[in-house]
Length: 295
Image 1 (cartoon, one colour):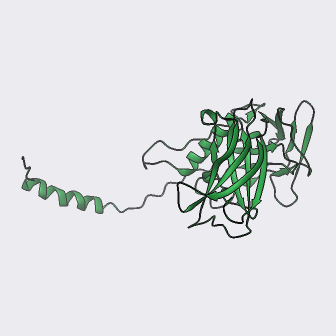
Image 2 (image 1 turned 135 degrees about the vertical axis):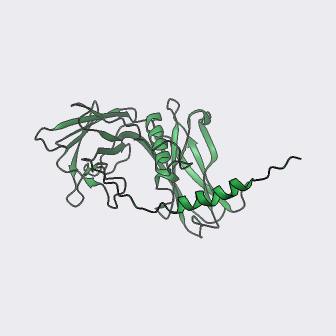
Image 3 (image 1 turned 90 degrees about the vertical axis):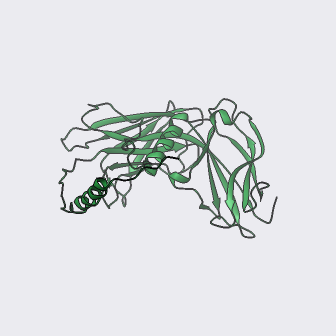
């Protein structure tokens, strides 16, 4: 076995080197100029009869402690071959634009979002568009709740129904207990699909797990419900990329964060008004059951 001995000159150099590091304590303040902010447009329309929303904001600085500023005064519409949905800005929340209650998209239809606004304040309106197809919905006949045969501390929610035959079948699964969402934040979204969903008829497929030792613990009589969204591949990729960027880079010195790819396009000068965000159409199905022990 070979041993390497640190020579005295190295021992002398090491504390001097460490002392030089500890002596570098002068603070350097770097002033950075704030930009004008980036235009962010985000929203979607579904097959559910509801009040749909599009949110338009101006991005904040990286270290900002406030929410992005809402952008008012936009003209917002969503059109298909047969329908036109007008969006009205909220009286209490600038930048939030809503349809009338009871608005619903049609499965299989293509929808185009159009936004017109003077973002840079030069007196001329800029135009923006994005398009998406609303996929066919999954048929969610019922759900079941029972003990997982694999994980002792988990209950599982089971899917009974059928996937559409001619859809990409990217599914986003959302679970609720007594109408309170369990995974409503982006990092908690459960999206499955593509090559993993070959079978169309699903007879008790476990699709969500409830940890009985943490949040999600069930009590007798709780109402458990499931929402299954069928997404396009483009929207699935957007959610995946957004979640990755929100999580941050590991290790520390990996590539810097980048703007998530958008489907919002400028009909004016694209380089003059930078824009981010996404517009999508997707279909939703819901079912629920009261919990009175294992099914």
